[in-house]
Amino acid sequence: MANVKSFFARLWKDESGQGTAEYVLLIAIVVGLVIMFKSKIVTLIKGKTEEIGAGFGEVGVDK
Figure: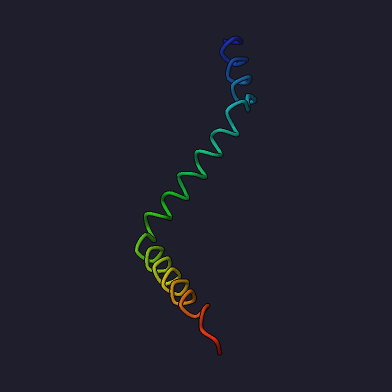
């Protein structure tokens, strides 16, 4: 019984995989947000690229 108790005590204190688990959780959250807001992100990017394209047309124009 003491071996089992000491095994679980060591397992509880072991933090070797903590950093990896945090990164995996963070990536999962970011991917989830991208999936949830995909249409809004695409609309925003299209609008910004159109603004940039219109800005290029104004570069050569003297005002």
